[in-house]
Figure (cartoon, helix red, strand yellow):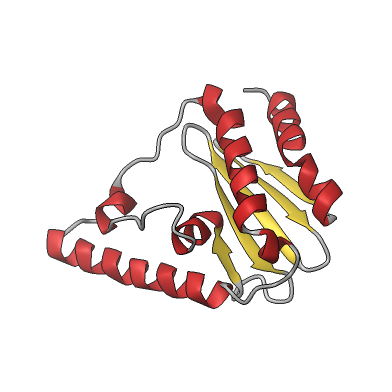
Length: 153
């Protein structure tokens, strides 16, 4: 996929964030096999991470402390009961996706973000500690899984 085609998909998919929530695209970084697109409004930063051939993911952060106050759309969906919690084994499985499905996957993520993450998009981060707690527990479960199964990193 060409950069221009990718950017067209991104702009088309996420234009609603700009009109409804005041987001502006602040950065697009292309690397050899990946891309990072950042959006910000007055309270929130969204970062779309895409590695070619893999399922993209979105991080959501409070711009007052990007390193400490952030989580992912995926953990939000688990917290809301939309998705099942991942198993530790899932952390070690590839997340492949055909390039032709990128637009459909991104549209789905955008819809889920606006439907279940509206509070975060408006700057209400009261749910972030619960999302971070889930992520920390999952990281501990994955560490135990590695130890039990003697997986080398």
